[in-house]
Length: 182
Image (cartoon, rainbow, N blue to C red; front, side):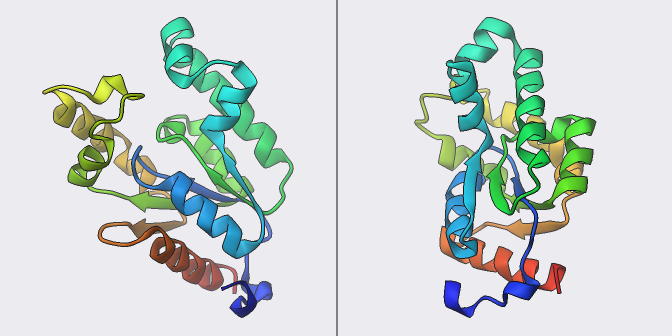
């Protein structure tokens, strides 16, 4: 794939993947970064490494507001470099207006659209997301997705991930990026 890319029509700044948890940001991001021959950054993994705690531990110990502050600070540090990279954000990064403005100004945002059914299927049996276990999970996921949809819709590029492989989604993003930067 690398040999066929028109480098003049490729991004020269961060490509920022947004989307609800389970939308495939990390999986697609790794493949996309390989196609672009650039670094892949998982924002949640960066926060975990910096804090020395899992995201669940940060939420339990310090609360969501403290986590969102860590998330915003780390995002700003990554984006301030301005280098081409692919960043997989956490699903809630778009909640902050400051984050949305920073992402819009510093890179190209790509939203990975996913349905409620896809999220529930992908999160089934996922032990590190206890909030989404049990009978109320579908209602909780739906409410969170609905509350974030208008933020996700503001992305530069939106990709429907339904029925597509990780590679197909990454190739579709590349196609959009080439049009976006040509």
